[in-house]
Image 1 (cartoon, helix red, strand yellow):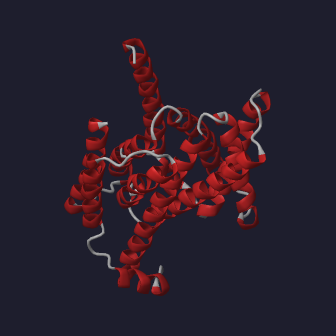
Image 2 (cartoon, helix red, strand yellow; image 1 turned 60 degrees about the vertical axis):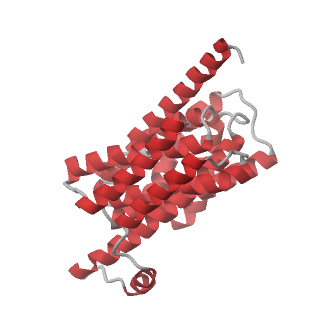
Length: 305
């Protein structure tokens, strides 16, 4: 391949990585905004996505790109289901446990991508990737060192939010939600990679949010009327669900699924920093060490390509 082509491809991939990193840094502040909202998780997701549809409809109506076929809509609907599970469980994780636990456990996503990308995307699993997964998994084990499977099963059915001693229970539920969101996030990345380049990002985002809004409609709570809640909904809908999502979808078109998943480890850095700065939520030494191991695993994969 000529050097000029290699250089051009490298520049395009570099811009794609920059878009993804920008989106992740924006998303890293989500936990603080969600903590400030005095609404249920489902209400936050529903009304923020409804607000995002208002912003996106102007772009969608002006788009001259072709609409998805029936098969394309089916894939986008599947993407919407994965995205809904990812968002709901991630928001619940923010609600029940610390921001550090929520973000660190969410980033089991690269492991999921590494396992399913060879099947659906024909991406090869390298020795570096396997080594990084082992490091990240050990880091996750350190974070979850006090949680056993039997404890989880028992506590889900005996949780008592009125008791001060139930904080461990809340952390367990939060960690579980973080893991579920990570698995769903991995599925989102692979599904996005399958349709990237086929449909315009504005169309994909619009239909994805439309499908999720329809799915949540039966469960939406009362419409918020206070200024604080409305502002939070507009911020989430305009910045997190629209601007950051456009950036992310633009980037993934030019970056492989595995690298996209690993780049996601940038989000914990921003989230932990903001959580400590704004909410005074400093993770303990062992959890911080486990989190650093997860981030190190991501760095190894990016460094080795």
